Image (tube, one colour):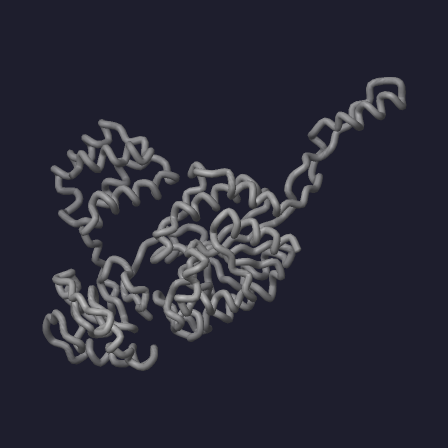
Length: 391
């Protein structure tokens, strides 16, 4: 397994050496990871990664090679034994059976009942439709099915129906050095251009030099400021969860935008915009920026581009406390409306195919909040979005 890990890191472009690999084996022989997956992750990352730009590549390879090894965090206020949350079985239901399972009756009722279950339940439970456990139809637990529920101890979403996720999840920053597979993204972004010459005159003005030299009868060199794209762009990237499926397309867009726009700022959010955003995913719990501050820092002439699949529980958009990761005092739609009210030029790019948008309630809601200014993350969609922003 360790040999495969080493080879896959090299194949992914992470510059690891044989000496570093042997150092990692020596550290494992010394039991520095204490036989814990989380400790091994940080140990191997410290030994094998020398440049933070390679952290994203390392995380992808680590997740692929050691898939199935859980990183369990004690993030619940109740003391729930970790073994309860292990994937024990998969319960298969027919589509008819799934349709027969009714929701609990709203977010508040769901959380109230969860608190009662935590207080009442005394033992481990698998299957069934009431207690917190695995592979059942209860609204609480992992690896089962329920139209609305609180997900506990499951490594990823399967049905995208959970209204709360009671695990601390780690996301990663986008890699802005990724090589584009096509030039179409850059070509589309070039529609969003407004050239201007500002700054110090450090570029030779050849036409002006020739004109003035001919006029004066002696060499008169003229300089001018460099010509650059004066358009200012504010990017908001949705990361984590279902957006993991769209990392490549999002990184290609991020890399292209970096090269096209001189004035560009970016921030991250998860699922829906709330009262705070962040610049680095690995420090998103410690270093955040109030959304209000963003709105008061960047003037209204910025062009705003949201990038996300808008696939979430409708509660995350419409209800206070609807966020899957924290209690938001104001509904997500309030913050989206504040952004669209502050920045007249605003669009949303969605990596989900356009013909699937009507199947997801949250996508329809976000699209409506943006005044139907949602476009697919395709060359044609980008072209339409840029035309909208230059109106």
